[in-house]
Image (cartoon, rainbow, N blue to C red; front, side):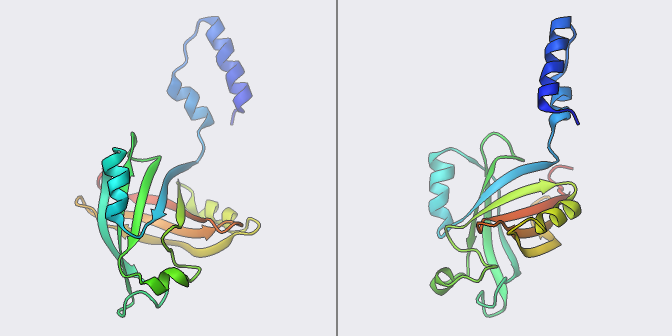
Length: 192
């Protein structure tokens, strides 16, 4: 892979020689295999958050669904099911730079004050990265100094009107406790 300095020098030489280079070709040379897709905010009141990010700031809702999944701890719901609502907002792009708002609908005040390390509480932030090489990327990340694994890669389905969005999802925390989701998109019927 060409280094940035080499790429700049090459582009300058080509520009001076009168040849043209497409931006896409130049960008492909420096493309990183990891996309920073989204920052997800764990919120107490998703409607209040939407009043700011959607209504006041003008972001557009790209996804809004209620999700159910097995609870990460026994404190969620007597039936062991964790209900949540996930809203994804976009500014100019519907793939990168998105903002997620995630509210756990069954969470109680006790859950918020005494969180299990695997639980999310209002005020938490999740950084979401997408890669086409999840198995290798996860293995490297899981062995980095100070990293803790919350969950190894497993399939997760997100409902959408066009059909389920299928993603392999893994969760880690970095050495400062920030939560990182590494995922690999397997199927998105909205894009097919």
